[in-house]
Amino acid sequence: MDPIYLDHAATTPIDPEVLQVMVETYQTVVGNPSSIHSFGRQARKIVDDSRHVIAKYIGARSREIVFTSGGTEGDNIAILGTVFANSHKGKHIITSKIEHHGVLKTCEYLESQGFEIDYLDVDRTGRISLDELKSKLRDDTILVSIMFGNNEVGTIQPIREIAHLLADHQAYFHTDVVQAFGTVDMDVKDTPIDLLSMAGHKIGGPKGIGFIYIRDGISLQPYTHGGDQERKRRAGTENVPEIAGLARAVEKVGEHLHERIQENLKARRIILETLDAEHVDYKVNGSPEHYLPQVLNLYFPGTRVETLLTKLDLAGVAVSSGSACTAGSIEPSHVLTAMFGKGAPETGSSIRISFGESMDEERLQEAGKIIAGSVHDLVSLGKAGESI
Ligand SMILES: Cc1ncc(COP(=O)(O)O)c(C=O)c1O
Image (cartoon, rainbow, N blue to C red):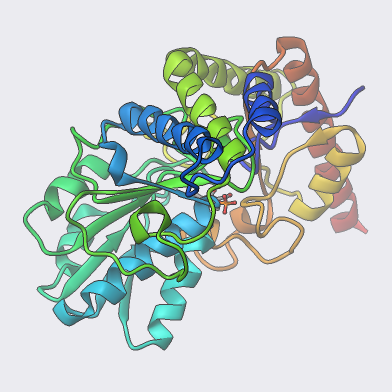
């Protein structure tokens, strides 16, 4: 069969309408948004209009949106920018053990710079505990960074509760919404989030573009130095065509949020029903209540993840073992390790299947059958090996 792509959490194919907007922008807009002539003003208008579309969708003001090169840069600006600007108030930061490396590695770097970081545990469903967060919060805490929805297992954190808990505290609240954006309703007017980072390539937008929401009044030190773009928060000429594409992708999310959620839930159901019909032994990793509909992480006892992924790839099913950044490496996932403990069977025998736009029902059933067949083969091979 033609290969089927079930790795949308790593990245999504570009939406044709988004591509069209970008091509038109590349073809018709030549100016630099900082130039004062008509060519520059034309480019500036595209950037301003795009910023407005995005701000409106999340309930923010246009000036609170800063364009970035994607999730990793957004995480870095949010964390480094706020802690360096606020280190006179304290040097303590709280995050969780299951953050994306864009957050975790930034925190590790900050440890080397004299900051103190508490990494919250998660339970077996991947949720942090609000009580643990409360107990770790100190007068000198300056930032709490907790992701909205996890990219490997899909677990959604109690973001509203965290935001309200921190509303009267000096610590800023940053959330990485890279994976959650597009299938979760998000409004910064309802939820007092201070900083939020997102990436376009998870929602049918272009790769290498994203934005960060920075609430008005937040003191932030830029870490790129140069021009005065983005109100001096991110220097460098704006990527006008990609910004236009990003805005169209965000707009489409707003127009189709409910359908997207339903389509993902349906895809998830089809895979699980096919596995059940084929009598596969599996367990869903993640929260049974609070989860991103597009991420399905499955534990198959008696399999090895590397072998299973290779077998599936050869059979035409593209899935992954976790975050794209660690796929291809045999390092056990830090997320599954935090959930189940070091060396737990789940850490070596789980795969992530992730869904996107226009999933064909028959193809999903076919993929489910291929996964079932591959798991059965590996389990019987393992059993045969044991009996030799
Ligand atoms: C939760 C999360 N945060 C951050 C990132 C990094 O985003 P980018 O690849 O745009 O730098 C990813 C990408 O997989 C992600 O899933």
